Length: 405
Image 1 (spheres, rainbow, N blue to C red):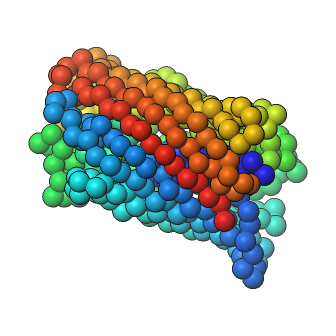
Image 2: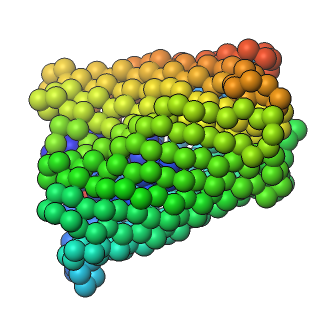
Image 3: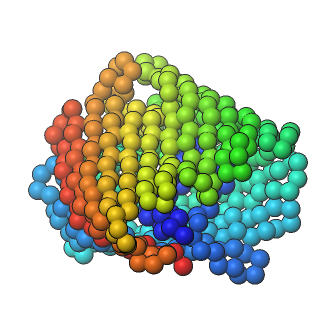
């Protein structure tokens, strides 16, 4: 099935979504890929491996001046395991990312994500428990360009109560801890001092099974963010809105969430936010000829900058894969993100403004049912309204091989 290859081309996007997922999506188990299943006794295994981003990066430090070029590649193995246990199932997720640079060895990294989740699935009352740990040394989001070690742990407890075959009540609590390498500085700022934090979430709502492949989850969520060494960032939030979940097998796969967020900093004089917040990470397939991947987000994030501690991030990224003839495909990629910062003592998000734009394209070749080879070229540029030292341009010429076992 082409779905196996299509899922593999999204490997890095899936990892990012897993590592940076909003707590609102924490009640949902992973959407299992459509790669070939390997049976090992009662366990169903979904293995895959990718050799990604093989080629040249013209600006490995995202520097404003004197950019440094290097040859790089990443090896990304991934495994889902599903094991039936009693009236439920255990889903294990393991993924690694091994990043190599030929000259600039300080840019090399080993990243890992592990998650285990147990759900009761054959009962009117269905509790679940999930735990995850992520450790990675990579650029975080669109703001911090340095590869700095970060560790995230999360624990979630929740459940569902079935009311009808299509409707159930759901709720969960979650605690997530984020810590940064205490010995690393970014632009003279200790990320550990500014951003080490704990997020506590309580959420409740209802799930509606619209179709066998589509569910709508309507929830209200309270979030409490507390920072160990910089309490001026402490904030409380309230969210409400629906999340659409699309399982594999239909034209659309992934998740999309949107709604209202009230963000309330606890420090007097810091502006808050009231308005739309949401995210989407979906794939759309048309007639087995065109695949469109969309990753979009609008939300408030915490900044490393002590003078501008929050920012509103809005953006969208896309990847279009169009079958041309035989094994040949055409690929187009693009992204645009805007970051608007909140100044200490200022009005709502009236500080620094930055935009990041990526555009590129290439070709792909399907080498059988479970393998794909791609060649792409892209250009990324960032512009900051405050200082030219935040500006940069980067060009990459890359190849990737994705293989589902």
